Every structure is written in C-alpha cells, then in structure tokens.
Image (cartoon, rainbow, N blue to C red; front, top):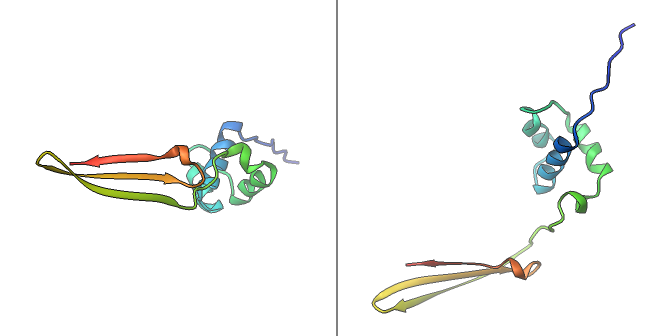
Length: 100
C-alpha cells in the first residue's frame, strides 16, 4: 500500500493567491501565477475563495468610476496642464499631476 502525505500550503501562499484572484485574475491564471512557488490547481484556489471572506483578504472595494478634470493654465509665459482626479467610493484617494 502506498501512502501519500498531504502537503499543506503555507498561509502566505494562500493569501497571495487570494489577493491575485480578488484583483481580477481568473482561477486558472492565479494557479499559473503560483507555479514558481507551488503547484496548486484552480479547484484548490476556488476552495480557498469559498473558505475566506473577500473583505479579510482585500479590504478595498473596487472603484467603479473616477472623476477626472483637467485645466490648462498659463504661468508667466509657460502653459501648463493640471489634472485632478478622485473616486466616488474613496474620495480621500485623490490624485493630481502637473504637466509643463
């Protein structure tokens, strides 16, 4: 009789796989992304997804839309573009850039 010892996946690998999945990778692509570290099937990853709450793994909700505005300014004789953006879901995550 042949006995096979069960190999457990480390919590760090599982969390990385869940992170990749909740970022938008498919189960199969998540499985392929783990291949350099450990071989796990897409079914194993699906089971991890069922076991864990997505808010524990990836607390940030996906952003559905950005509000972006731009303006052209003249600073002395130089023209510049100012771009500002924000998310309705996370208004504190605004960004801006200045192109001269």
